[in-house]
Image (cartoon, rainbow, N blue to C red; front, side, top):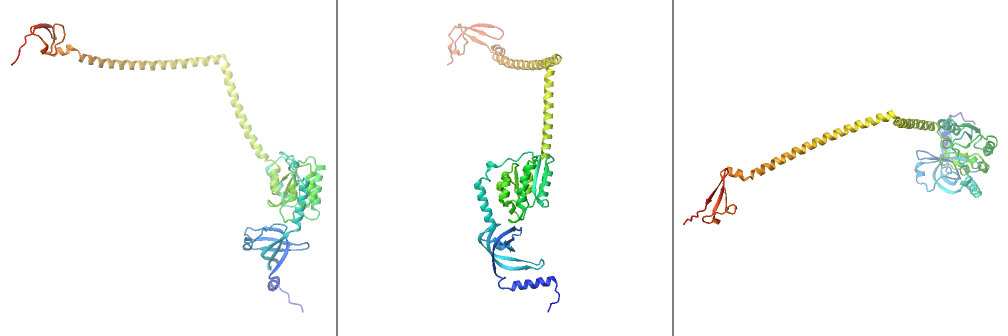
Length: 402
């Protein structure tokens, strides 16, 4: 007996109850290889577990990821334990993980490592073989999908930086069974039939390890190695590494970074040249002015004017010097006169005549010696007396007092 029709939400709700009540699906462990690994800003981790024939979506909550004992990476084979959960709105189910144990290296990771060791031994990664990237390429060929975001980013970046370089888009598949062959053939064709190409950018945007696998194929690696045109690899995101990155002449973290490194900034160069041009003109003008002044000095008339100007300036300097010297001489004469006046006054103060004028007299003995002690005089001794207005003589009479 057929059931009556139900709504989509009712169907998904019913399936969710069935899944959540199943004892096996409520605690299941799944072995598989990690693919399409994504770390969300919230701390949650999203990826797929796959084997040779199928894959299942997985969700690892942030709290479980924080205490995880192993590091997750593309191609890693793990055993994930958890429960099946149905997202009703989208109608999709996933394995919600409680714990992860590392089982071993996945098939793709093992193939990657095997080929890397092989090509490294052959010398395909040697730096001596890598070609220099031209500083001013005339044409850049971009080997990638013509509909992907990578080609848009590369073209936009080159046009933003450079008005000189031409861009050749060489469309190829970048994932799937035939992608490696198309990429290899494109690189070979560019070398054979496009001699005006200076740089090849080969790459694509980000993705899982399977989606990037075309750039891990040996045929692509050998085409890059044999290319006479320098090759810049631009595969995935900054954390993605492919075999093409190791063989290429230059590895760029992203397609945008490849475009940045491939071409110079002609607008900045033009601005720099204009600045240099202005500076050269200014310096040239200064040099011309300096030479003009030197030529004027060689002109007899100009030379005569210059000499006359110098003579006038020298006369002015001499006049100023003479005036200053006259002032200094007059100042010194006044100073000396003042000092002489002081000395003269001192001498006059010591003049004996000035003392005699005040009523004093000078007595000298017969030998003409000034008498300072009256006791030294002898009876009847003739002495001379000098007053202010004349001289006289006298005899000494000694009187004694009892």
